[in-house]
Image (cartoon, rainbow, N blue to C red):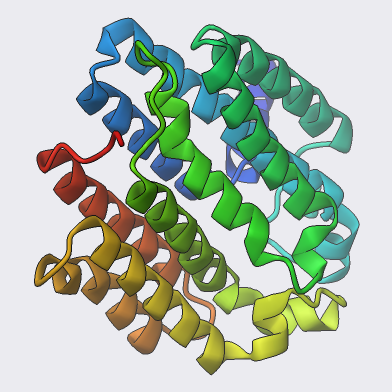
Length: 271
């Protein structure tokens, strides 16, 4: 293999790691599952997954692009931009392409569906640009997760909205994901001057919010004993994980997938 090919593969690997691949893939998989179960068909499912993937890529890359100096000052080896494995220009170019693809693929799902999905992506950008450092840091997550099932259902004939409980559960899962996601970086965030709601509340209170929000979402989607199965993973991961572990956030995503499965089995996505 030539040296140019090696450099190209290394750059692609760095770009992939800069997009926050785990949450991006998880959210995309959730959207694809909802689309398939809702009856969007093969093409509709592909368009839904592609639009969501492009939106998530744009959010992930813009996050690292905006925070690159802060990450470099903190010596973050897990951030390719901070570690100079990829340049700001390369990430900015990839971000622009992701935005274009997100708009086009969302539009292919219909005007109403595109509007709510682009609003969800805009919420993610608002978090990156400003809200992550304010007491409203939870709001973009709540909005984006609530609108994800709406993106699916509004592309169906008749453009139905999801059931109210689905919208509420999505918002709660977004809040749970936000609080669980920032737990590993609370100390570093405070040192960098990021004062989102979890950073103001502290680790114990934030962990409690993550568990309670996930529990409330599960009760909305699957009242009764299934809520225990849905909330056990984030609860255990939040309580037992070491301080810098990503396990709580991944557990919340797993709980969201399980709750979604229970919902889809009951046919309760649409209102």
